[in-house]
Image (cartoon, rainbow, N blue to C red; front, side):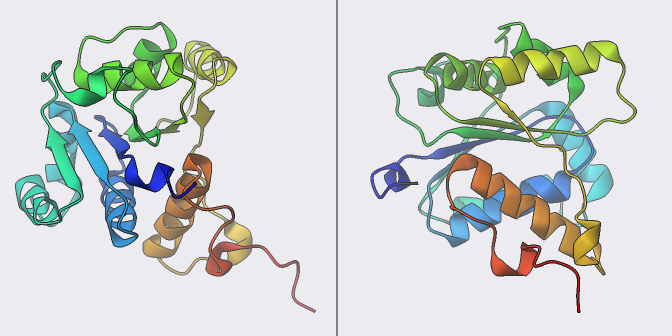
Length: 201
């Protein structure tokens, strides 16, 4: 990501799929790097968050709002800047991304701010990274992911790097977040902690 791109916000969408920890750590890693973040979260995502996380979403959101480079938009706020292609952003990641959101994005549907912001990235040829959380996948899921890939999105399933011998869930999450940052162009390569260096001798 160029120095000019660093002043543009990265849009982070959280949809209603399992994997709230991935969303939290992605936002926090971007803010740690002093990169502007524009967040949009579905109501379903907030429900999943309540099931998976120890800290309520409202508490996490309040903490993020204390950062000067963080902005939050409501899911129904279709007048938000990120709904317009004239508003420059540094790309978008939807993490986690439900298969319902993938289907909507693949077919150009934009009936909430998350989907509209994703559609803007696609039409403006900006980076769009989707982190799907569903298994197993049937043919329609796969076809929708293929459609997104063909129009420029990066489909990045949160696969563990078993070759790095992760010891904790946080090790796995850290690896996936690193891959997300590379896909967004925030980093050129993975952090040294998450790079494969070949089999031990």
